[in-house]
Image 1: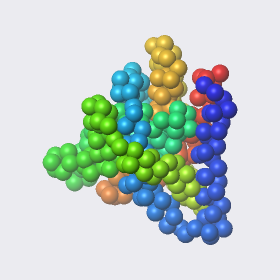
Image 2: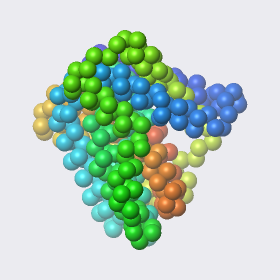
Image 3: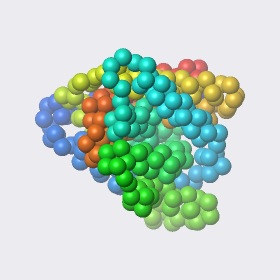
Length: 308
């Protein structure tokens, strides 16, 4: 990997975040800027980025061994947290709080953070598509079913199965995969505007991210299990992935993708789920905040070490 290109790519993440932080600190943008920018990115810019990358993507390269590595790492992360929950001092998490705590230890921010990092490292956001499909179609329905049962005593299978298909990223990914698989030609009159909108995703999400850091207190109301979830998500998962790809002798690109995805921070959706079901809120808040700061640093260090 070209180290100059790597550093340049990460500067496209860091500088907009610094800009967003100081813009909010100086009251140049409002307190709602983070939410407004994230909604704009989530519904329009990220789907446009995914589409513009999938139009020319090599599907065989997308669905490689790195996906199996991620499944293995997630399973290990869940087992580790379950063991830690039993062995650590203090009150054990059970029911809804346990579901949220476990999600905090493995459920990754593949969109708003994962795609900008993928652009910085590889110049291609489409590499995230298989992982989005895995998380949205497999792990999210299972997690929500457990939350629903733990908090209400029952759940609607029909409603849970419909949830992934309300995700604009998932719908866009399906459409882009069809276009790519059948090699459907897209006129430049359509593809070019989509590409331009997608190019705005990275700076917008990082400005919003920086703005959201103002006044944020990490590890407020922290407990042993929150620290465990943060450590698993930010440090242990990427290190396990690194060990696995080393043992399997994966090619550098595939190996770096596996490590990068494993190290992504806890998704904001975990906090949304905690809020919706009114359970595990401190855990979700702490892990989302802390891992969002720690994970990109860990990913950058590991990526530089692997490409040395």
